[in-house]
Image (tube, rainbow, N blue to C red; front, top):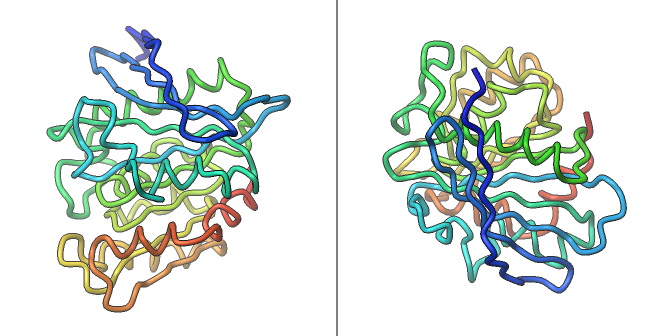
Length: 251
């Protein structure tokens, strides 16, 4: 049931690129406060894509800063960079959840999607996306979601909760619910994982991909040889290939 939806916008604006700017906001849904930043390109004349990026455990909090990966080319910084925006300008949404509440489930292991309640942060995020669609010039046929580690788990979970919402997904080093891949069998997917990952074993991605390959032809899986946990997202963001692939998909 939808209730208690309140959108708070601060006056804080942070310019990070000549082609647009980031703004800090908070979204309240059902008593859960979801901090987020959103990048808006300048001079938007028509509906453009929205890409959502879900952070990992190290970036959890309520400061509305750590999820930005400042000083890197990871996640929000990758998607708002001049190089990427020149390929296709887009909104970039970078929400932040608390250390105690994950994007999905309650740990890093595989879980049963159908018997695991949606987390407050995921519920708030999905309703925030709906709200942004109503208020921004977003192309509803080009909404994408990516994320790393606990955020990679969140990508699988978001897609299973709203399979009709996303034109493509990029789960990086995150677990899912392999027996429920029927829910996302029509979503183009590119997963990344290091095969020497000691935090989230590669099997959790491999199990999802193996199950999906039987049902979905638009699947890519990049295995980073001898790669540790962080190598998967370093590989994903090393060039423009990820964004070029994402925007090639449209509902």
